[in-house]
Image (cartoon, rainbow, N blue to C red; front, top):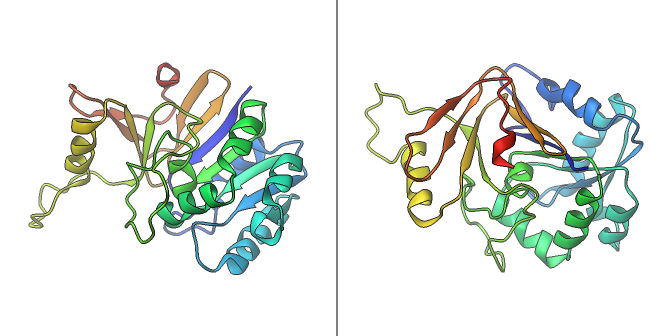
Length: 232
């Protein structure tokens, strides 16, 4: 049974790192001891692993980073849980391909390995990276991601400001462009929101909620607690 927690962001204003999703993360990893961490989305992986490790240690969990391992696939195969952190999605996807981790992660999550992603780590749970907000600072060999869920996620979502004088595209317009070329639903997650998946059941958590985008329909507001299992 697949078990995932897909979070919009690692830090909400006024809170510490992963503080806003600490309860959900600890529930996901209950019974686990050894968590594999994928820090590829940031350049300073040592510091990133140290920061995440401190938080997981507070939860009574040992976090081991794949970047410290000569054979990262081995750690993925032996861990009790997996956490992929945020940063630049293009860089993250490049290195997941480079180290051959896409298929090992798919297989382990399909077998029940608890998976947590924040921001870019949530993006890569989708079929592609095409709804990331990040700049293409590197060129991955493919836009293909893990495909742990059949829809796309747009993290850090913010509603258009009707009072804004900025003439550039809104997030809604950019997601509409995605739907012009791709017939795949998008769940946009506001800051502080997350998706919890247990088997064939998916629930939106976090008071800010989100929005669903799909071809041929107006965007639909999503409320905390809403059952989104039909998207699976």
